Image 1: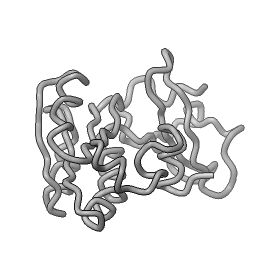
Image 2: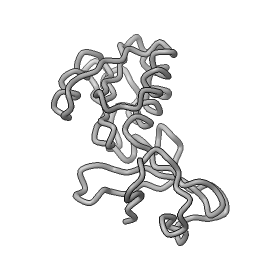
Image 3: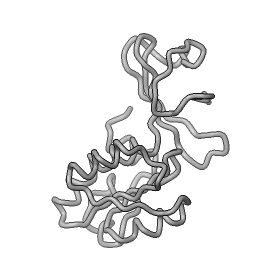
Image 4: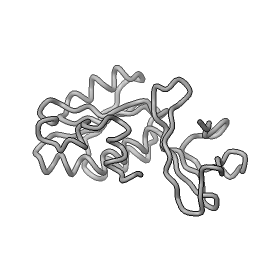
Length: 165
């Protein structure tokens, strides 16, 4: 496993060659996922030997999930929302609100995010550090295609939604 950052925010590319896992990257963009140190979250990142290295933090993951899941929810008549904490990237909140996504802010702690995500049929919640998930109501599990509602586990969900291979 590669530790993506040491002293820089996770949402900024780094230009230090020692921080790039070049043995895993090619000349084309590579998407990789790995577990963090205690394996309680998956860290998604991408880059190439010639391009900037990017780690997908919780704010970015919320936006990506919203981009893919909200249209599905609209198509199947389900409510959708995103829960963030005060530590979320403000630009992500503006981006979500600008696209008509319901956004709620709660106290820091996954338990608060998880509880609030239950207000919608599909609730996306992530802390800025990447801890989070997508919560599906029983109704959503019945209506949504299996790959969107957890039919293949969290890693499979992400890969199915974002066409990783």
